[in-house]
Image (cartoon, rainbow, N blue to C red):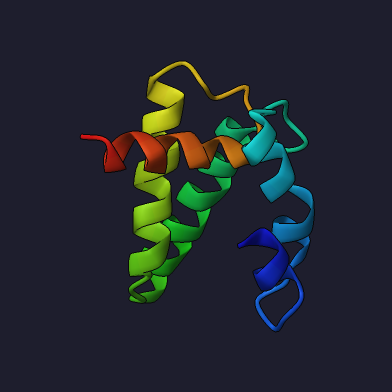
Length: 90
């Protein structure tokens, strides 16, 4: 699947660089999940002040918040894969 997506319009830096790490179980940070959570919260606060709705950002904030609450805030943002994987097993 990675090869098929990476060869087309769905390709991105994240797909090319983080997907292989996720598949290898490498969650060492390039950018920490706790820092991503902080940035998402800033974005949501700015959106709130502007009267804008960012439902996708709300979902991402909730997932990153779960990672941080589980003590995974120092892992890379690709650790979001773990949160989604665990939700699918619930």
